[in-house]
Image (cartoon, rainbow, N blue to C red):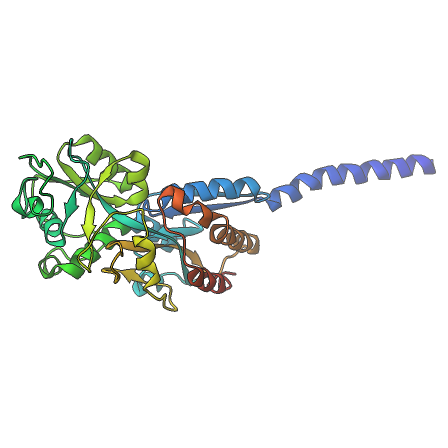
Length: 344
């Protein structure tokens, strides 16, 4: 009888363990949901896929919706983190009771992709590309474009400008640059995630970076602003742009890193390089941010986020060059690491 009781107790203990084990395993799994900027989407998608594989139960789902939508999702508490190329304003941060920690996670270059069959190299002066987006230059054989491309066979073809249709950090970066170099742009459309574009049937809108890329590729005579990785992945032609020093610079070289190196990150982590210094500096270079709550209800989720950030700052940065992004300078990585401690 005693033996039977002992066996029964053992069976019950084993049964209890078999029921508890799956529950414990489930508790170790954490799913992080993020949304926002399309600018860094290719590299974020690669990071999160690789991180999720080796994280021991953490998965990261990120939806490319545009910076404005990501910020709103963070404010509405429908995500665990968001991403934006325009960071967040003080007013937006004030709407989040848990507090917000902004962290620059990668950087990139905004390029002007164009579709001109037979024209493989195109140089655009600051005056020329500003005039194109103001609607003041309407054809590809305009004298201002010809002046910097004397050997190119520029066609008598209307220019179709492709802009973002959504609230976009890429638009913020691009229009901030135009505002910095053109008083007419600054006093007109100005800078923002959305702006009042000049009225023209030759200015068309497409959603997200991939939408603008596809529209440019499909439209003869088109030009549009996109993050360099989208041009690199789609093999789109991109213009050499004139920088502050007067030099024409192509993306994908040392110009982006020179632009980053000449600027110091402030304590609030918000820094925009609207018209960077440097002979070789690429003229439209920008950090892009992830935004996290400072206080999470679930400590496991906060720990998972810190682990994800660590991956992005280490293994993730090694993917930057081949994907068309700029790795963070070491001094910036050090500052981001310190700020990560604010996430609890």
